[in-house]
Image (cartoon, helix red, strand yellow):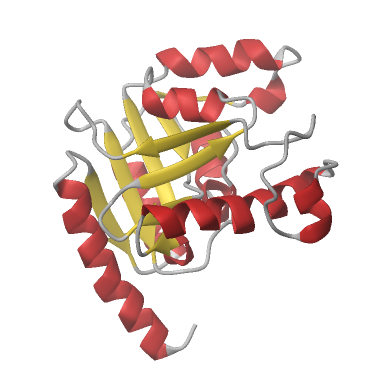
Length: 209
């Protein structure tokens, strides 16, 4: 990333953080993956139960590895033969980790889900939700954020999962009703009723899809 883009992201992140504060959510700026990891760990108490849905950005900063090796109760659904059981445990967890498919400059988070375990846990259940979001996912407004989620994040995700949808072949959304579609549930998080529940770490890097 060149110096001008880095500085632009830094300034934009401050605007996003102000927007989040008006929505009863807390934002943080991290100049690097290492700073993002340190920030995330500062928000998680030792001994806390922690879980997550999919989240390439969370893995990119190395957070799951540290939690597994540390004094935390990390619920890894890959360790469960019954995936549904692991997903249900998320609703009573102390902390839920996620990224976002896109977000707006004024702090609205956009997420699309197939099984809905991720978006439902974001909406209700875990005591604290921590988002790790690369600045590549920040869009001007809700309309452009939805377009990013549907035309950038969704096609890439279905391709990496090997799913048979039109967007896996065309690279863009056709508003399909394919049996393999992952665009089943759309969650737009515009305000948190519970103060201190939602935390968003903005990372000055290109993370996730």
